[in-house]
Structure formats: structure tokens, C-alpha cells
Image (tube, rainbow, N blue to C red; front, side, top):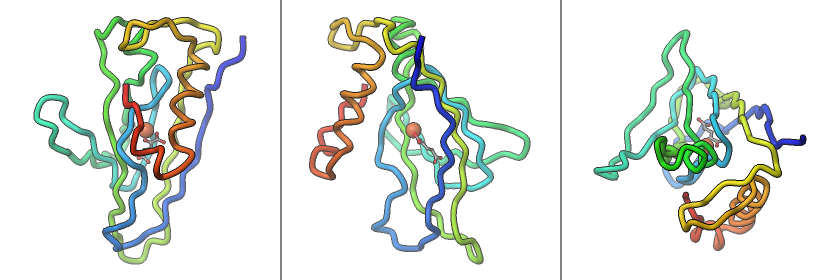
Amino acid sequence: MPTNTCLNLFSYPNTNNKDRVGQIKHTDTGTLMLLFSRDPGLEIQSPKQGTWCAVPPVEGHIVVNVCDTLRYLSSDRFYSSIHRVLPVFREGQQHRHVVGYFFRAENDAEMRDSDGKTITVSQWHDQKYNTYKTPESAKNLRLC
Ligand SMILES: O=C(O)CCC(=O)C(=O)O
Ligand SMILES: [Fe+2]
């Protein structure tokens, strides 16, 4: 059965322009995301206080991110983490490099979203990614 599981290589330009954003706040669509990074910039939002907290890279460690599908399949036992990427200027560096492995369930797998609606994994994925198409539509991004 096909899935949208993928390995993504990211390269963010190094900048000290505070108006630039690496990635706006979002949750990931799949089950788990493994993030391999030596560069700072990732932040997660506390679900209770709403405050942002840096996730600094730690030598020999990776970040494991819970994503939407795991939230739905676990009936909210696990929550998908709300996160964003900010530019962190680093002297002498050209880019911020990150590798993300996005585990995604089978496209036809069904789950119940937070409105109680039954939706397939690929429908959820496509619906969410359509909101990124323009900066205007991204303002309405449904997080989870
Ligand atoms: O660049 C990062 O640190 C995180 C990337 C990310 O959140 C994503 O691609 O969904
Ligand atoms: Fe993400």
C-alpha cells in the first residue's frame, strides 16, 4: 500500500533578518517525524502556556516529533507538537541544514479527526498542504 513517507533535506538560508521565518507554526501530518539537526532554530509551543521554547540540537541525539495521524490513531493519547522554525544567525555559516524523516501511515488508512469526522490519511495530508499554497491561505492553517 502506498504511503507519503519521505526523507526531506532542508536548507534554510542563514540570515539575521528577523522578518524572515524558516517555517510558520504547524503540526506535521504523519505519525512520527525524526529530525536530524546540528543547527538551532526549531521551537515548540507549550500546549498549556502557549509560550515558545527552543529545541537546541544535542550531539548524538535526534528529535522525535509526534504528528497528527498518531494523535488521531491514539485517540488523543499523544498530541502532535506545535512547532516552528526561526532563523538563527550564525557567523560564517551559509545555510541551516536539517534532515527530516516523515513516517506516514498508508494513504487509505482511516482515522477520526478532531471534529469526529472520518478521514483518510491522504485526504488529511492533501487538505492540510493545500492551506500552504498561498501566504493568505496559510493564515487559516488548521493545526490539528
Ligand atoms: O527544520 C526543522 O527544524 C523542522 C522542519 C519541520 O518542522 C517540518 O519540515 O515539518
Ligand atoms: Fe514540522
